[in-house]
Image (cartoon, rainbow, N blue to C red; front, side, top):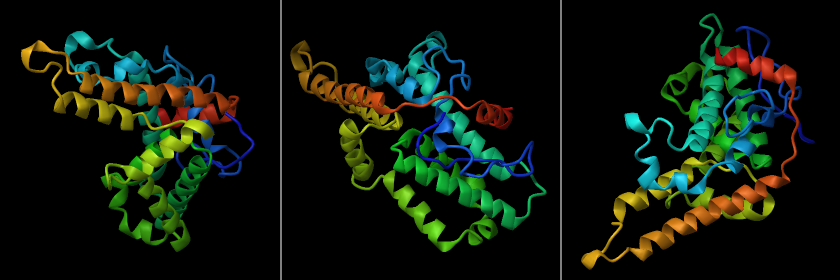
Length: 255
């Protein structure tokens, strides 16, 4: 997809050249007509807009792994599948080539960090979280010599991006940004809502003594789902078109 701002991923000496971040927009990672074939949407914006809020409820999502529930909450599964595709793309560009030397590999790390920074500027927190998850994975974290070659200013940028998803004070930073996103427009990280609703379902009973409905639980679940609906509406401020060259490159990273 395209936008007025620019910066995005690329590939080293794996199947093809890793395009410079000024050639491919970071939001291409999550918006392209032909990138994904899931039934509920074509890009992260559309995927999030098509999430059915009540499918995020803990009583529903927690049953997803049962054999008889393979078709349950398909809109959420599609969003997660796309998130995983972005994470795997980051991992493959960094780790796939065993012949890659330390310095070139460090350049790839630096590039992804800068792409993440652009995702942050564009309020694309879904792709940002996917990139951060890959960079914080054990397989990438253990590359001590490679990380040592990343410039200090880039490492500072990386630390600041990681802070967004810090679990300090119940993810206070990311929750604050979510509130701002209602008015500014953003593509949020769905995992925040899934975690909240599963925890609510685990902590609170559906019924009180005497068989009375636990309206406090229902109220708190409704508040989370209402926030999802507000953020889905805010996605309308995003306007992106597909980029065939990026689609072809991204597909090579997935296979």
